[in-house]
Length: 284
Image (cartoon, rainbow, N blue to C red):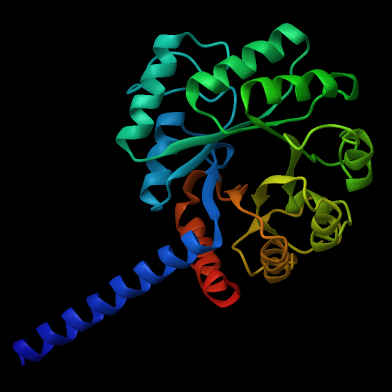
């Protein structure tokens, strides 16, 4: 009996390993990079956020500015003005957990000097994408820096009255700018604004750099908030979003931004990742 149970357990483990391997292969084939926007864990330090990303089995994080670094890194906050010693300690800690700081934001700068400092910081940290919301009159200079540093810029669509809350506002402002300037598409914010995320992605074709990926609760009478939910349980057509990204041959970062159950969101996020892996297997 014990021998039979042992063989059964071994077979189950082999199936589990095979499934995990298949998921990783499919994800690699798709060119999509699944990570976490650190604001998901804003009640914790950046060190703890990295730990949680590692616990989730992911390798990418989008840092947000202002998050306390944590005891294992040092005093201070994640900020493009932090000194080089703290920058190095941050990179060393992330590497120790096999986590890459792929993007950072959402950030706004008030002067050319600050934009210069931000891009220099991103270069030192190996950051590939700066998620930001520049003023319209800053875009030409930001485009210049993006090409000078070979770092992509992803303009984010916070809800109204953000400068970029609907696709038409973004598209009008980036006319004539290089392909280094693109979009960080927050599909949740679009849905909250009554904009179809799949339709928005079609309009952004060729300009998408990253996404803030999420699903949200249906509107409820008397409640303004449409909070995040486990993927596949909300009102966003996530299958349609992934199918559209596949059609566009998008390759890049999808940042999980789970803004709910703040104190213990990891179990929910694991379910989101399971949903994602299932859909990647189906679509790609």
